[in-house]
Amino acid sequence: MNLKVEVPINATKEEIWKVITDIEGAPDRISGIETVEVHHDPGEELIGLKWTETRTLFGKTATETMWVTEAEKNKFYKTRAESHGAIYTSIMRIAEKNGQNYLGMEFSSQALTFGAKFMATVLGPLFKGATKKAVLKDLEDIKGHLEG
Image (cartoon, rainbow, N blue to C red; front, top):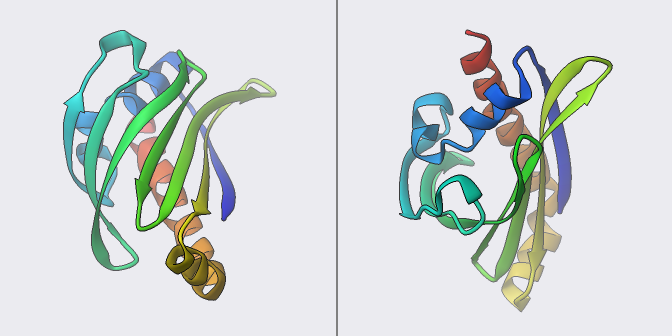
């Protein structure tokens, strides 16, 4: 599954970056996130930041451990998670278009095991729509926080 969602935000790239990289503060801004536990914080570098996040997804509580694999300050960071026989990657990206800043998220999953491949085939279309809706809600929550 691959999807991409973005929203315009009336804030500077630096303001957006500060909010989206404050992983510990995410539960205060994103309604779907219940708790965050940081396991490794490399500081300004961001690459290597590792945390466990508990959120409500598809009406159920889900806990995933994620880590930042790539980052460029005020532009993007990429995370990876591995669970349930699949690899999940996401990219939070700040972009400017015609003088307007946008915050976008790209999400992809790659099924590795037979069970994960089966579930992706059978339930993939249903999960894609629900995942897109959840990602858009996260971005709207961040936008609401930044725009007050």
